[in-house]
Length: 72
Ligand SMILES: [Zn+2]
Image (cartoon, rainbow, N blue to C red; front, side, top):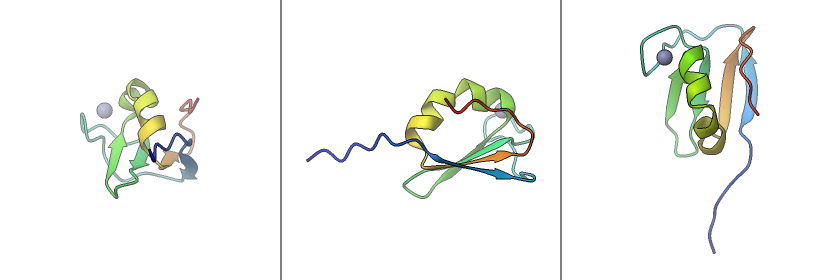
């Protein structure tokens, strides 16, 4: 039994994200929630850099309105 979950995260849109990027402190554009309960916020630059990691590790992603993050 290997409970490997490869589902795409649920994506929702928020009017604004008050959080800041956990990597560089810029305005957060994408907030990711991990199955274990933690969450990380990324600016546009870092959301794109870590897009593949976010897609495979997060179970819920909140994207700020107007930010055209590619989720695929
Ligand atoms: Zn950043």
